[in-house]
Length: 256
Image (cartoon, rainbow, N blue to C red; front, side, top):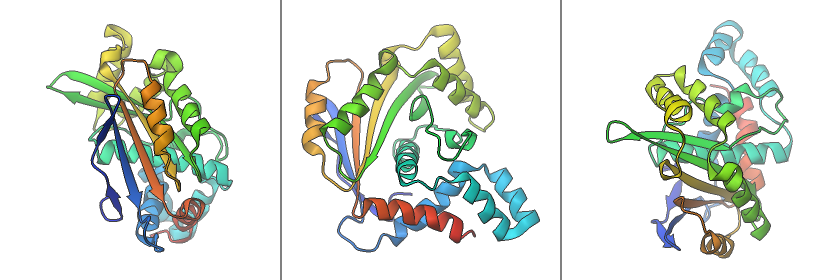
């Protein structure tokens, strides 16, 4: 979903860890391409396709729009935080080839309530049998400063830098209901039988912003003393708040 409206820098290294920037229309006043793609992504991030299809068949576009209005957050802070998670999850799947499963936002109790647990999880089986997990922390701010990066680092450091047991079991459960059920079974096996080891984990710090936090990212990675591989992605958009709000508004207004 990124190729048609974003440009990416090549991965570079800071203190042995990977860093890249993804720029969405930063040099353009027209964010329409990204907004269109994200509006479609938002619909399935908050409601599964089966429910949307059923509502569309019985109640048409007005019914789908009404349903989505009850599911999507309206507060700017909630929209911003969710968008960071959604883009980070999409990046793991689309750009890095990880299995991410159905959106965890589908199961949220209330549209404005913050979700607990790890922001983003991804899994991949390599070599036919070896499971690797990514634990991700997403932050979305107009300006990402040192405090924001430290907050993201604190999130990645929780639970001894491992995915939380609750988040991992919920992740596996969501996968078991999909065509990637085999990956879900592998996640459960790691959690319940072999144990989650640090050599099977990577971290993703995903920063959605209109600013350039390179100095803070560099300081964070230079100071990191752990052993888990780190990847920091800075996703820059020109008009941060407008971009996010336009995407949410279109998700409801222009139901296909």
